[in-house]
Length: 295
Length: 122
Image 1 (tube, rainbow over the protein chains, first blue to last red):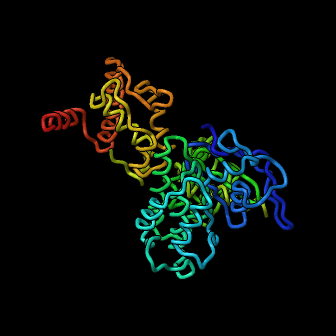
Image 2: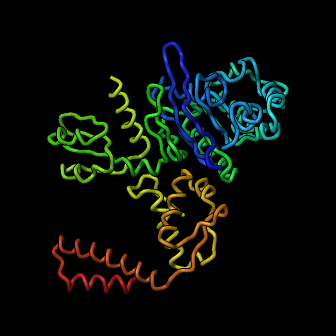
Image 3: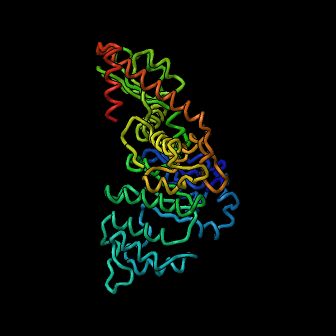
């Protein structure tokens, strides 16, 4: 599988916000992160991709062959899960299992029970059940994840799965992504949004950066780490360095920011310290530039 | 395999270095399969693309070959090429040692003495 999703010229218009035009390819067999500030359009894009909301124009190709018109097969192949209230709040594990079984092909009750146990959220076979509204945000998210992972899918699409989870649960989420992808042997992919990339760095293969409803950068993380450099320098050189940098913050002592690796030699001549950025530093640099451009 | 997640050395380079050593030392033999990219990523708790980049580096060096859909296999190694690689590494390490010696004001005789002692200890 070449691409899990191919997004061609997708536009979605609201009164006060326009998503698009979006062109992107979500590579098959990898985990892709949608990174952006609040209001960048991550959730809107995910909703369009999963058919939760319609689009004004453009097309989406699923798994190199299906279009939105093959909606039943698409729906059964994608495990979609949002951070918003995904199930009615008076539901419990038992009613979720029952509805998932009716709603989707390939839902495994056994796997759901195992995952509920693993996530320590209860047992869908117990007589006494706790309603979703009585659960903590973190446990609610775990419940949604257990439900979506109990289906036989080719693509997980998760909107802000990490934000309500504690550090240990985030670590487990990364393990789950890698396990899901490894089990699929190249045929399973993950797409998730986040505005807190640090915890998800080691589970991210491909990154798509969004701002103001548009994609501002995308690529495999290892390639992006070679395309950009992280630059630190002393304040007296900041004016000269500024012009060579993509984003920049400084004070009376020093400055830092990211630049294209092509400018490495010229920046080194300004006595700067240059290093490889991690995904978090890269994200801040790219999003800061977008914020500045938007002003 | 062990990796430093907070090192300046990129993780893919650390993985490539360890596999390279295993191949050059004969621990991995010609025809042996490298671990699956996705399983290795899962086990090392790193992203798939990072292990893939490590394997691609080894492939570019001619140490392994990708077999479409089946993963990576260790190539039959050219003994002479391996010796040359070690020789380059050795020259590099010794140059670093000379550099440190000069900074510390240590002469060639003393440096040779240190080398001899270390050789005998190892």
